Each structure stands twice: as C-alpha cells, then as structure tokens.
Length: 79
Image 1 (cartoon, rainbow, N blue to C red):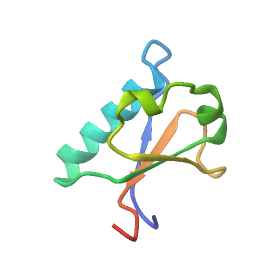
Image 2 (tube, rainbow, N blue to C red; image 1 turned 180 degrees about the vertical axis):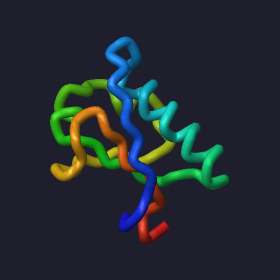
Image 3 (cartoon, rainbow, N blue to C red; image 1 turned 60 degrees about the horizontal axis):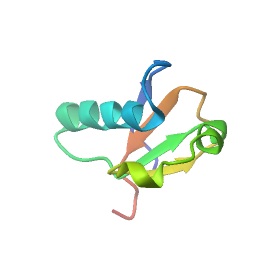
Image 4 (cartoon, helix red, strand yellow; image 1 turned 90 degrees about the vertical axis):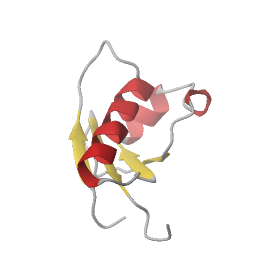
C-alpha cells in the first residue's frame, strides 16, 4: 500500500476492533470504496488477543513506521 488514509484514535474506552471499524466506516464514506488493509503499530497487535474473532473487514498488519493509536487504511496494490 503506497497511499491511504491515516486515522488517529486514542479512545481508551473503545476496543481495538471498534476503533478499526470506525476508521473503516469513515474511509468508506469519504472515498466511496472499501479499504482492504489496515496498518497499525506492532505493539497494538501484540496486545490484541481476539482480533480474528472480531470479523474486521480489512487485513490488519503491523508496521513499525505507524505510530501508536494510528491506523493507516487503504487498498493493497494487489487488490
């Protein structure tokens, strides 16, 4: 993914999955299409245990260049 939307969310009351769903929803409304990928800080994935059970509609991957509480959403180049 070379370009996308950077979303910041530090809401401690929402779960990690809820924060991703909110970012995906905003992306869909803003760009009129669905993102396929979401890059997050590696520690965010280490702390999240039940991500697979959340039915998140994007592929969530760790990226060391994404800051904590940030979500980089976009469409993978192969999609």
